[in-house]
Length: 421
Image 1 (tube, one colour):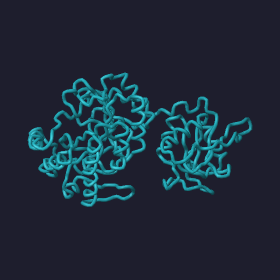
Image 2 (cartoon, one colour):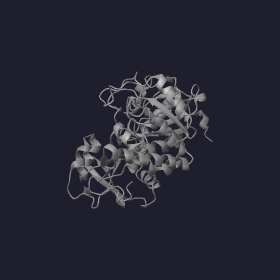
Image 3 (cartoon, rainbow, N blue to C red):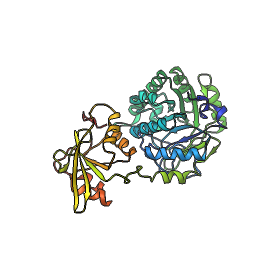
Image 4 (spheres, one colour):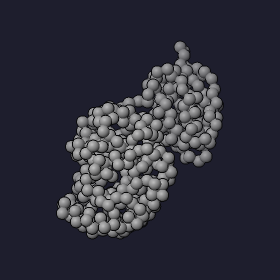
């Protein structure tokens, strides 16, 4: 059983003895706040959205091992960006799956704007995520419209009050859904003078009624090249007054360090600067054993000449190998039975365990990540098989083939019934 008292952000008494690591596996964001700029990184700067690198799930797993070696007091593994976890759900869930497998003793947490978390609430519970932070700086859409430049729902972008209304609806539903699943919820509220400084107490009241456990009032940090760059940072007197007023409704966090998206170590002794080189090195890792003992390439094809099937559509895979005079077809292997969820991709990885890559017309993020974790590169391309094989075996630019056409299935996976993730 995990000891929740060892989460330093939710339990001030453990802040001096328990540490956390933020794994930066979520680069994309689905909202734009008027105080946020994720373009710049300085190792001496501590604010959300800043990271020295971005990791893929298998890279994050390796980085986690190195972090624990360097700082064994880490008790919490979290994901807080540099974008939003649920603008990058496949990467985030795969990272959490790997952590649950390799480090089940760690406390797992996520920090989100709440926009797209609802479809993944059951996944979070199943993966053992025990703490979630939702950033809510307004419960009045008119105020929210001043804070958010835009909100993106799928491929649709909303601005102004309509965007703020949609975001608030999702955020409040997220708190309710998380609490129904027994997950501890912290609400971060950015205090912006002249915008919401006299409103954050109302935020405290509303979120407490939904069952949120703790609120964190974070003073605005004016950042260059943002609409709020010329605003004054709230002083301690203002923050302390607001915390006192808000504490009548919900417990207040008073020891926040405005952590980076790659923060690591104790709250009072962040080591992200010391470990930035390690993080960057891990971000350059390729899938384990990509070449060793993997002489073949698997191809999803209807007739054995063109790459023209979705990964999930393929009932079998053509297995190709390199020969003295070019490339030769080794055999055709049946694919695992469709419709058995994530387990299917583990089974496919086992079927293709001697293949260094699989070539297909389109692939979803979930199967792609699962295959990469098993050391199988997954390329969504099109064209003649032997042209692609030449790129794989010689190290050529295989991604240049992704825009080709010629008797293929669509280059982008729509996810419409093909069980491709």
